[in-house]
Length: 211
Image (cartoon, rainbow, N blue to C red; front, top):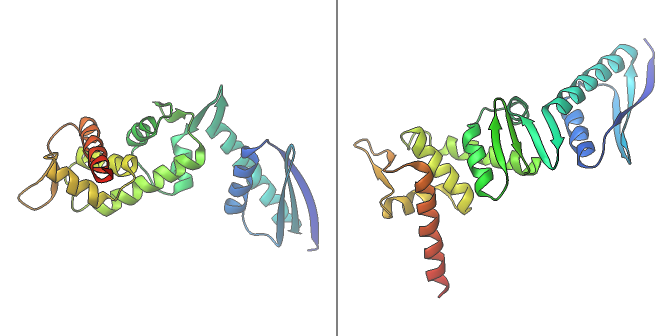
C-alpha cells in the first residue's frame, strides 16, 4: 500500500489552538509523520502515512476536537468545563467541590453545575491545581483521618503555598488539628473555617518574622 501526504485544517483562535495542538499531539494514534502548524485562524495538520492510517488518524482528531469543544464552552469571560474532561486529561479522579473552593479562594469565580465547573480561571491553572490536589491527597492518605481533615490540609497547602507538613505542624500548634489513638491527624472544627484560621495564623507568623 503506497504512502501518501494529506493536509487538514481545524478552525480555532488563540489559546484554543494551543490546547487543541497539545491534545492532538498527545492523543492521536502514531502514523509515519504528522506536523501541526498554528496559524492565525486555525491549525494546519500535515500527515504522511498509509491511506488507512491517515484516514483513521483524521477521524480520531475530529472526535477529539468535537469532544474538546463540547467540554469547554466560553461564555462572557467564563469557561464551562466538563469535569469528565478534566478527569480524562489528568488521568485521575479528584474532588470537584474542593477544586471549586480553592479556585474561589484564589480570587476567581467558580461554581459547579451538575457535571461542569464554571469559572474564569485559566485552564492551565486549573490543571496545576488539580495535580497539586491529587499529589497532596496521595501524600496524606494514610496519615490523616476523615475527608474533611484531608480537604483542610489540601486547601490550606495550596492557598498558603506551603508544604502540607508545615500546615499539619501549624494546625497542631493552633489546636485546629489533633491526633487520634492511632496517631492519625484529625480535624477539630469545620474544615472551611479551619482553613481561614490557619491562613490567619500563618499570616501573623510571617508578619512577626518580618518585624
